[in-house]
Image (tube, rainbow, N blue to C red; front, side, top):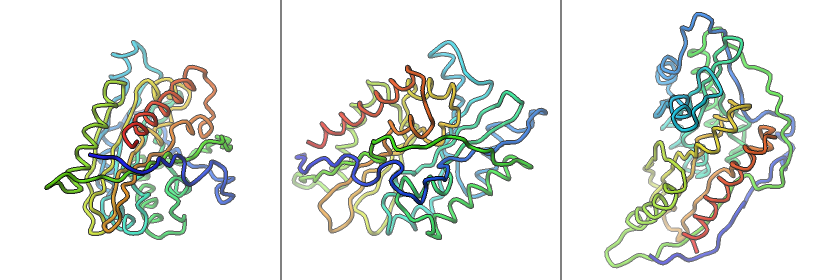
Length: 306
């Protein structure tokens, strides 16, 4: 497979560049008292599923953290991913950037006050990453589904005041690459995409990235449209200590797609180093791992698309 074309890194949005979101929080935390312990990650998953946002993965991170790092930061801490296939399909037609948040992610965690909390992207956050207008009816419908799921999962809950002072970091909001696949005899674009994905997975696995789930989305406008849910424990573990709501960003989604009639293959993911400014991360070890996570995957994709 011959790879052509230039890398485009950070093609289309700088943090804080849009005044539309200047005073709007990009993530939301829904919370309720859970002194009786009647709400847990499994009951939240059940409520989400019945509300039309299907939870595909719901991992107990404390089980993982305790084995890998011999300690945990919170009494309960889960990371989960979820989607609504119908709305994603509708948005794909005009906005392939919906792949940047397919799947959406959330953290489920216990607070020091016996509360249980769920962190997800807000409508503003969904619009900001994808550049889909916040007035788009399908994006609004997606946000409303998440809101309904949160209210069903945490009865009598409320949104907390989020005080992250989001400022421009100077980093691009999205890291993006382009490539052209030169087909071998008898190969299809899907075959070429599968070969690329095999190489990509072979590169990210040994350096600590895991793929909880990948999606192959069918649409008449595309030769292929695939997304990955990707996580690196060495980044989310230190960040989640002081910022458990980071689950609104992690796992992060990477999209690879090709429109019919267009030779260009697009690959993109939300730039991970923007967690630092978005969440107000100051811990030196956490900052180091977040930057390392961004740079490693960027370098891998740079090499694969040369």
